[in-house]
Image (cartoon, rainbow, N blue to C red; front, side, top):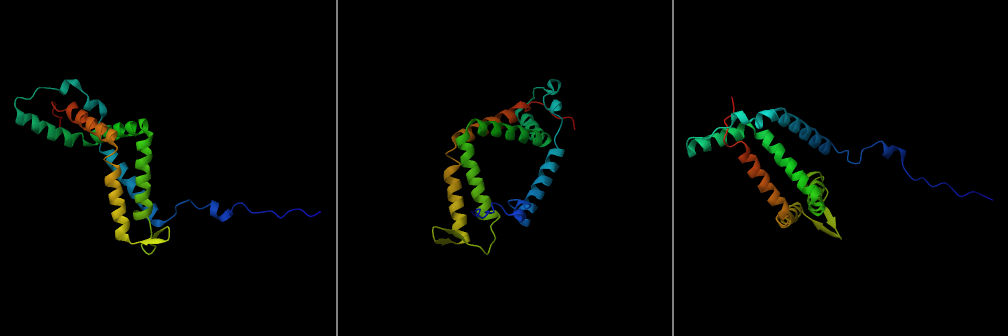
Length: 173
């Protein structure tokens, strides 16, 4: 009795390659990593942000506005970190919104950013031009993002909280 032939289930050469090994993707990740590291290196100490001894009441409305502008520029990275944390918690508590936004991000990445320019997008036998692809992505973004109203509410809350937290103090510069 002869034994059945063995069927290969994987190619050993393809296992060593990452799923997305294009130079554009690697360059994107490298730039993103460098930008995030540079941005986070400019943050101020968190204890300085919440130091109650630096709070004082401004004498006038113009002085308050000036303090807000100075404060935002001084603690910009800290405020953006709080905003990102608030949005991350908001998205984790609403998985459908997270799924919709991740799908939208994936569509932008794979259909516009990292698709080779000589390869057209073909869906169900129809070829889409670059202009049509961009138009569909923009329209889908305009339709999907505003319907995630909880994200907008959390974003507004995070902005108001971050701006109001240190509005009455002046940084020691």
